[in-house]
Length: 222
Image (cartoon, rainbow, N blue to C red; front, side, top):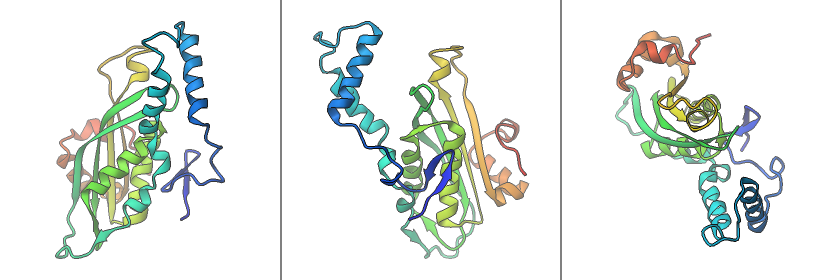
């Protein structure tokens, strides 16, 4: 299955072997964690830290499992027996947990997805899984938003799709400028969601977001 490149990373498929560096072993990864513990100023051999490298590596397998899953395959099963349903389908407040690719600290928030079907629909859990797969990679929020929208648009070919993500970034709430309570909003509108203001406003109303605060944040129709 071919992939589209977004932000230097394959979109819509797992990284294939030609694009992926050889994966370090479990032991090599644990050694790297031990080095970081020592660099931070502690002793990796003391009782409270002796098992930490193993725990961290196991946690990273969960945090970044999205590199080994294919979001396109998750959308492969669709349903056409919908009694000709052609109105908007919206999933809102999808829990999102990702990691900033610049500092590898959490991005925590929620995603909203809406689309206008064109003859077929997908199980709603699959939309949430697409969000999860892309979120479980090192990300910036702008790329994450585009990857989710573009993949659903590519596979389902709806008449329009909108994706909005609202999230807090611990790279700026716990370090650096240290501004807790700040959230970032990004959006990706395609098809009728981009071209038709009425459709776009219906989507924004369905997710309960004020029009101005969302439309003015990272949305610039061409």
